[in-house]
Length: 183
Image (cartoon, rainbow, N blue to C red; front, side):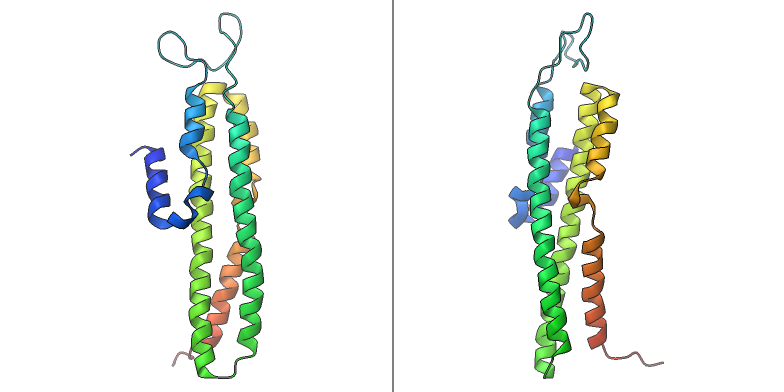
């Protein structure tokens, strides 16, 4: 199955409520297809003697817009999760009853699940971004690939260390509530 179809299927299956927040892979792929076709149906990647200049299809502008969209969503979610984690942590320290503890455990499990979904969001977008940059490389030449890859690896949505720390922190809170294991 081609990446675009897999990408759409994965988004629809796992995170339909976030669907419009994902990288618009199909839109970017359409921009690439507009790049300078040559007479035998293949696309020319470079301008030079005998090659007309490559059309500016707006790919870079669209890619930047998509990256901004993905990064903004990811960073907003991450910020919300920091606040939520602090609230849950504070509540965990001030429990009055077993009923409150059960309710808090359910909330932490839901919270944990949503953070794992954001991690999944990051992975899906990263895979789509890698694929589209690779396709762009085939049409625009190898020098573009390395500069694009550096930019890709520096995107906030690719830096998931904080998210992992929040996931581990919520797991640590849950472990405090777990009964000790018998030897």
